[in-house]
Length: 112
Image (cartoon, rainbow, N blue to C red):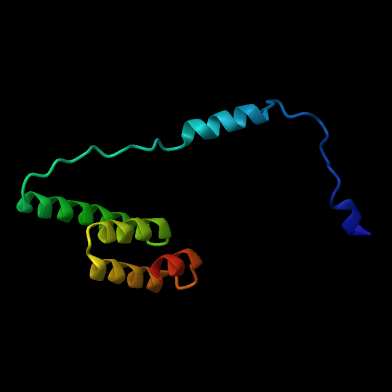
């Protein structure tokens, strides 16, 4: 039977460089992106507030343009609009996201 032989190891010699599980975990942790907290923005008037919203929306749209399939970007954008009481914009963002991936259960739950 050829199936029983396919699972056997052909080369049983140790690798020239041994890597421990600890080393793999350490390297993975080093390669992770650092979570950067955005600075607190103090807004003094309506014009400055609108400018801030426009800049944040532009950042979210850029993230979506480059990573359309990442549903977390869409959800963060929609939540941002909900936090700013822009419910029509938030609904529109959820609908755009559903056009990208209509099978995402996370997206449907948050949209509802």
